[in-house]
Figure (tube, rainbow, N blue to C red):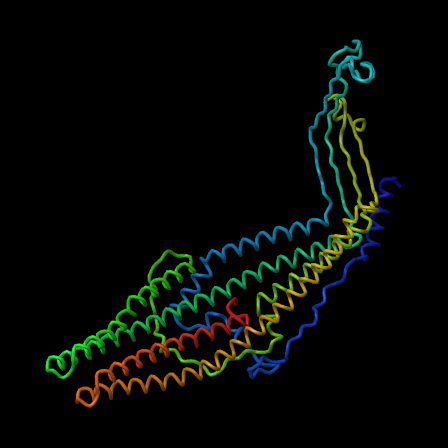
Length: 483
């Protein structure tokens, strides 16, 4: 058997025998201190979660759905996230290609060297006369002439699993970019929904302010008639007018906030500033008493940031194996072959111009100034940090869900109480006006009743908006919005 083939076969056989030697520990999910249910929730182990509902089913307002769809397509953060996925995909492809031999080809390479008489060797030692008759010159004689075409192959055998760990880490980082995109989408869907609900709240508050302004104006006209009749003084007109201006000042303030909120929504959707059509009113929305939150362990599958943190831990775990593998011997096989001649006419003189070579070697680092051990120790510490980050992300997610559940429960109670406040305040305004017109109540009682009604109605609108936002917060906290 040809000795080159024999040694090559032996090296490959050794490679496959040693390929089972994979350093580093395989990833195992760490224990997570999570309870069976959320505090304040009525979830059971087999309950569903609203995070499983696609966003276009969770939200029913047609304009809100259009805004979210536009944002997912045009938002700049989403576009950047897609580019990050493509970048990670290129790195993953490179990690897969690392298992293949590296091949380099040199075609038509030439090498000519000239020397003069003071060169350390004599002219005749390097002189190559094409005719073979002339004596060697003393200056700038042809010292070396070479025409070369070659192919070289270099292959690092993955004896200790270094390349496999690198591929494992690259895969985890690749999947991280998908989870990052999902996390951006959940935040974007939440921001669009909260912005739209805030816009509906501002509309409702503007309507309340305009209605109270008309009511105050009507009261002012009555007070003016009483002043003309000598029943009240000018102070009554001033105080009534001051109350009316309080309601009037709210109108430009709310109109300003509405315009800014519309522009914010347009920015999130990747569009220039413009008005936003409303397909519903805030008070048309009806809230549920509770929502399906599932159980804490489901956050590991639903929340993109939790999944991203776990993938970061996977990547860090793989990096420990890579750093450890660098401390072990590296087995490489290099082969080269081609054509090499001193004259171009002899280039294709086969087999005279043929050359070939095979090199296999084992490189064992002995002392590198503790660099390899330091890298290994740092990789283990980075893995510990990633585990802490994963546990912290899970803990934060559980707290966010719990807080959202508490918000929904308590806001429902506040809304019921504030509804009673509004009904009582509106009845007070009605009775105060009747008594005022019949002379049994003063203008101060009317102003107080109107002020209470204005504040109560504004509070009711604000709580309604907080209820809707709490619903969105729970949806996002559970990982909803990316499906």
